[in-house]
Each structure stands twice: as C-alpha cells, then as structure tokens.
Length: 153
Image 1 (tube, rainbow, N blue to C red):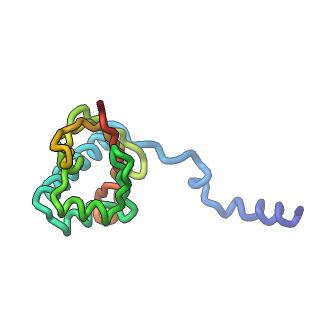
Image 2: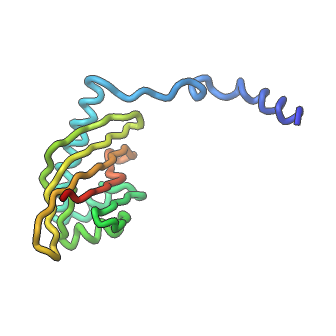
Image 3: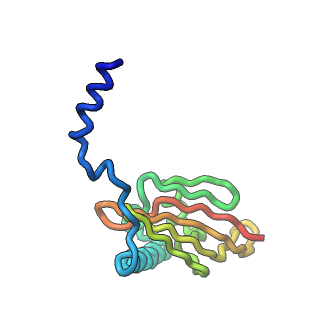
C-alpha cells in the first residue's frame, strides 16, 4: 500500500498544473455573443436544410451521438432524425421559435431553450412545445447534440 501511495505521489508533479486548476470559465461578453450569433446562423442553416431536404448538410449538422426525445417520450438517434427530416416530418429544428434563451458554456457549448408550434400529423392539430437543445463544436463547426421536447397543454 505504501508503495502505491509513493508511486501516485511521484506522478503528481508530472500532471500539468492547468489540469489541476479550476475548469475553464464560460465565455462572457463579446465572446459569448459571438457564439450566440454563430448558433443562430447554424440554426437558420439547419432549418433551411430541413426544408430543402439537403441530406449532406443535415448529416453534418447532427452530432454522431445526437438524440431527440419527443414530447411523447419517443427517442430518436441521428439516423432516425435524418429519416424524419427527409420524409418531411415537422421538426423543431425548422419550426418558428419564440421565448429563446441562450446559455453559453465552455467547450464551447450553447444550451438553448424555446417554444415552438409543431403539427401533429396524425391529429392534424398544432401543439406548442417547450424544448431544450444543446449545440456543441466539432472540427467542422457547430453541431446539434441533443433536443428534448415537452408538449404544453
């Protein structure tokens, strides 16, 4: 036991001081606003890709580990979401949105909440949904990582 403790203590100085420091702080001010502007432009690009069924743009816009939880509890992964988009199903990604609130985090990551009317195709009735989406950066730029939607009464 003493030998293990000594070995672990001997390695501690080899760990860079930055990794032992506090986590990176979330961007603020102009940097946060730049990220919000970028995500806003990304959302417009994604909405256009949904409307025009631009498969290449859609595929690049969703993170490989993307997940969407519908208001009904149904779960979609990236492949299922791409199929839904190509089939022309109503998607939050292309719906008009109100009550938008952006939260900027280190990573860079942006969490966005909002409210959108979505057509229920089976009932031919539109319902309001409150949703949260998470945008992350990848080598190619922003990607949509998660959406969780809740139908409002």
